Length: 269
Image 1 (spheres, rainbow, N blue to C red):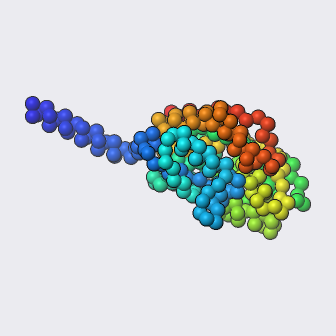
Image 2 (image 1 turned 60 degrees about the horizontal axis):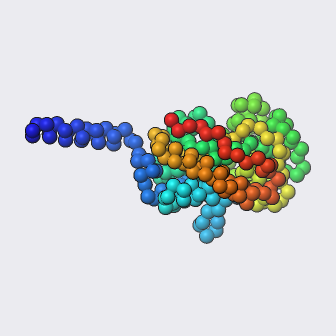
Image 3 (image 1 turned 90 degrees about the vertical axis):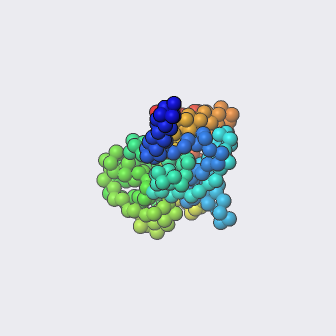
């Protein structure tokens, strides 16, 4: 009997050690308190105010999801280049930060959603006349570290533009106004928020290219958490919250908000 107990204890210990060695983190489903990373640098999307609090569409979505999951939430800032890192090193449990779903990112993190579908657009000075992505040929585009939007112009669309790197969109905006770059390109909601806050006459081209599937980042393997987040996203659309938040933050931006429906999910496996 003692031998059986000893073997059983050894197996339990081995399984526990194996679980730790695999590096698998607990699901957000099993936590009472979660940390969600949001952008601090994008007006109307994810923005940190002078008092240290956050506001914007993604911020409201993050709080809604946490409430539906029954979790106490702490928000933390994450710039574009930090979104993968904060999940991989365990500082954040979720990322709701204009996190566009793509295959390279899916190799490192798990995505719930998408919770919003937008399109890539072009922000320009009042004296420019860009009408579509082809008009960027030979021009200088702001490239934000950690964002793949500028590369999608040169690599996917094969437009021979010059990429000029900057740390964040605030620097991009100043570079655009000071003529260090000719255009800023990324999700239309990001550009709309920047233009509204700046108020200097910068405008969107309404080019609408490259569908942007914005998802909720979670740690790889957290399938139960992903499924719970997807259920919460469905509720957000069905109870009218998604429409309410989009009109709250972008209703005066000129974006087309005519059709607001639950996006087709990626799947959590």
